[in-house]
Image (cartoon, rainbow, N blue to C red):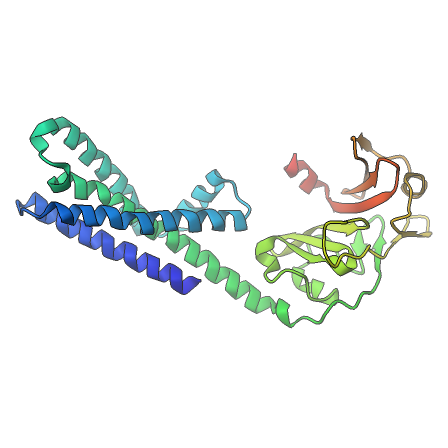
Length: 308
């Protein structure tokens, strides 16, 4: 994939140099066939729109909205490339204004210098956008190679033990490196660092991360949509020393008896959610409308506030 991106960047650079050459030649009085500008114009489509589609895909991979995506591109691109792209925008606008100011005196559009000056914009920006994507992809490859997730052993299927109030799971806690998930086993995702979570369908378990640090955990007891899913085998060590085994048969009364009165309750048409707090962390117990356990999510309280 990275090799293909390099080819598109090379095509954009070639198009930019060709367009700049034609533009300078036109300004110096050279009379070039209209087919030259037409060829430069047609060359924009595979380069520019490929860059846009690749960038959109990368922004989705990074879980950014479009504004955040562009801010990230600007923040992480080389200054010289940003200056080139910014100058191309300003120059394209100047060419557009010049073309309208001249009116009919400008002559045919395909032979005017302004046309090639305007087209420069659509070769400059793909270089900036694709350079950002290439850098991100290389970082992903380096992170994945460093973590060696594909070399982890298959999940052993050991039951999970959730300790209260710390919310540690088999010794794993919030803020721990995702590398410690090796003790759980190899996740379902080919690239969990990009996907944003380490998912284990056969274990009914998922651990999310940010900056390669665990920032939420899900225990899933019911999921009819995922192939290969098995309900989570979870026990909860309560503060009073009791151990509670949770299964798909666990009821809302069992949850209330174990965890106590919830901080909040949200009852919808299809499900109900009981929200608890433990030592600055949040626990959400999701149940069916009939009161059967669907899943439990746990995360630091600051994650809840940022989501709001």
